[in-house]
Image (cartoon, rainbow, N blue to C red; front, side, top):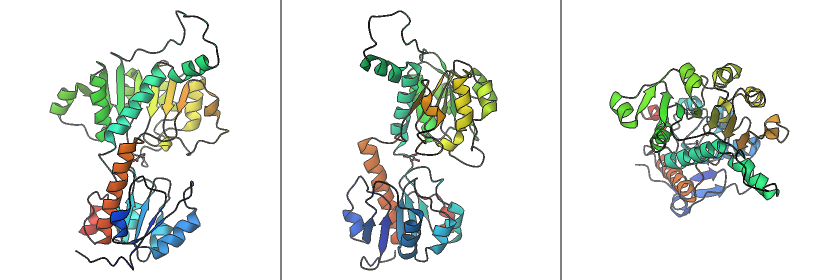
Length: 330
Ligand code: DGY
């Protein structure tokens, strides 16, 4: 273990953290970017050049230029499970470990996904708006008819931690669950969860609800484009709490406005934030929330603490508890 000199060790935290920094301040001089917006690229570059550790968020592009200019950098710690904003290959080439925060946000994100699924299925947001606008005059037999959730077919795309947590929730709603993933899970788990492995094509053809839980990669960029929407049922509902770039926004707009699918609920968009002139914002059959899937008070505090634990380990030259590029230790 390396002894850290807190007078010389510097870290930059790119936003206010929802936890105490006391432990970190014992090992480093801590600078926090306190603005509401993320640090501009130039600031990020300047800070990276001088610090030993960076604690960042998915809004910070930690690209090859930043990494290669960071001569003293010993660790990059991301407060998120996804890390597509970080050039991990460039970090690995410089033998810089990259930390992230898996596991602790699984249930919170799955809960929120379920909230979006239910809200989209039962027209929760438009019906609230309707009520506030004074349009509720009487009970009507066909007012805000939605889709039945119990017993419907759910398609899960990506079957990591969050995909599995979604399958567990679906059991409580007696749903038929199809899943697609790079790796088929073992038959015991399939039986225990009552789920069926499927091709993407079949899942899209058969599912009443389709929910995305795959990381963003070259393979999943615009995985949902015009072709996929054409395969889906006209009654289908799409939920995305993973990464915005997995769904082509123009194709989604056409699918929703032309009735190729019934509705969608997005917690993530391409780009983020969604531009206010996006045609998607004109649609009533779309719910959009501002990337808050993991945003419960308790979970965000745990994520911050895990990111700090990764950061401190990196500063001390110890193996990060949650490292995305463990090959740096080989
Ligand atoms: C993540 O962790 O990757 C989410 O998108 C933010 O919590």
